[in-house]
Length: 145
Image (cartoon, rainbow, N blue to C red; front, side, top):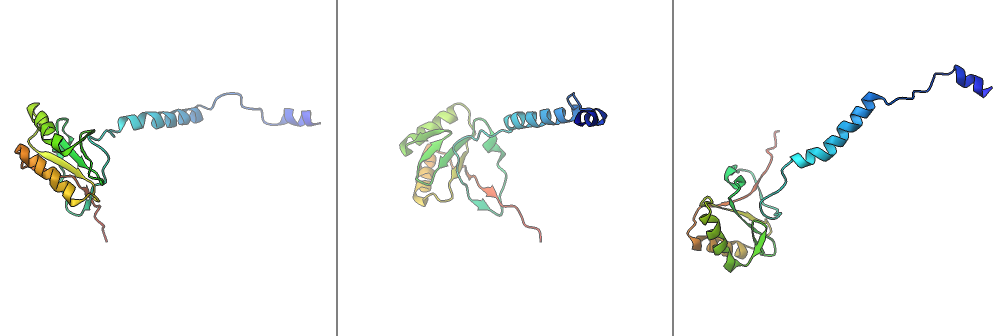
């Protein structure tokens, strides 16, 4: 009796649904290709920079030859991805300037870094003769009420 009911019922679909297949393919492409298109390679190390209300965009920091110095919470100093001793910093800056870098230094200072560590880096930058120094910050989204 069950066999007769099945014969009279709606036939099974034995093919791939093109819409479902396309949706799965688009999702897979989005998962694997989209992250590769997003530029995530920051010049330097990851630093939690301070958040401010009034900020100015610094497009020069995106240049390939920009001099970006990072100061971490523990006082560690990085130029690009390399950890440096404070005494090595002036020589590294001079190397950047020899290859035509902008005469401006971008500092990425962790918001919890000690003031003394930042002053030490500023003194090293000024010892090279650079006075144009910019601090990288994160802009706070303005609230609309």
